[in-house]
Length: 490
Image (cartoon, rainbow, N blue to C red; front, side, top):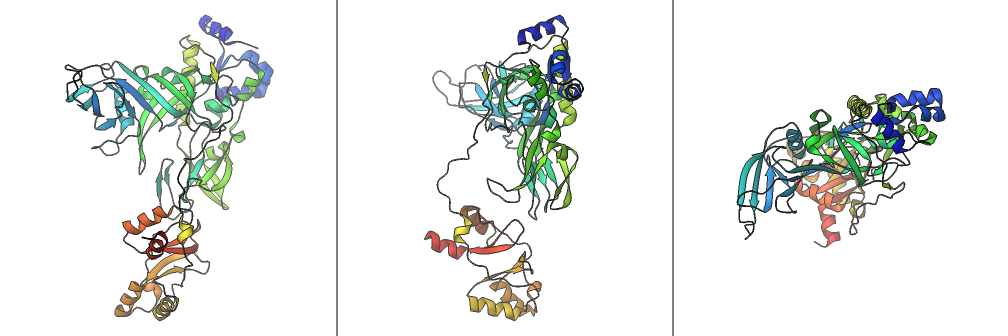
């Protein structure tokens, strides 16, 4: 066995053996864990991806006369000011109030590039902080501290995403094409930090890490830490970071975000740790979930390995679906190599954690009041085929006392909807079949959605009924404004 002190002494002497996680796979395969542990001292890992849970604490220094921030903005991105007088927290996903596709992430990037940003603030106007407003420009050099503190970074692995619905979805997993048109995934698999030390023997509170080109630290387990979907809470000095390892971005229909480069050195203390760093993509499993079903617990489409995801294609329902990553493997390797260089040059010493991360943690959903769902309010749908005659549709509405007829095919899949108003118009226009008058773009709901979602759709689109469908667009029922009103006693 080795100790951290022994490895750090080798770093100081310039005799340390450092390899990247990518290189270590072949070394362990060739030598075995025991010999690899004797030969290698440190394995560098890396990840580079969008990490929304990112932000910076900034102390701006006191103005003259002094001000206590009530509200403040950087390039029209509001910062949180519920702290001391001129302290603020800038969140990466906070959108600008005036600029399109711009947010806190972009302000952070501009600061790291050395640019000035506009500071605008209004104050409370107290006896000790009499100033009520200020407008100025500041750079990283001008502020006292700029400390990046990220509640949740470096996911051990991440669930991949697809979309079974017939609409394009804009999500934090990128753009998901309809009808299983694509799959997106995040994480760097076999070179990602937490996958190379799954027992968290060397990764924990106090571990020194590479954070966007600077020396940073793990300050705790990240929010939503739930191994094997572990996460890290990290901090580092923004003033020491390098722009090449940090990149602002914007996810259409979601929010701004920021790509970060994080690398963690794994000290090879014994054969067990060496064996852990030999993990391969085909051993790392995750699931593909369906964003086409708008539930908290989205259905699992299938289990998949990172080797399959990285191949660029996976099979869903016997069809080949293209896959694209939301992480940069090129930049992750660059992180590993830069961290390796820093250690070999004696610029980066290792530290063992003062407290280990939890190996098991249950991720709980939000506690909510009892929510009534669409299934409770839906009634049986009276359906019709698109080649049916207008007269048949009219008689069906009269006999069944309904005003809406979902139009389906032989398998019960929704094709459109026809209303009593459509039938009335059909008579005046001389239409013969339902197909001629039905609405094809139908607003729908799922049975497990909160009824509040259905109500908002009825109001937004000024309609009085919603077909209830499953993930394959089969009609399960219908929910109407009349039924909702009666059941809620409105």
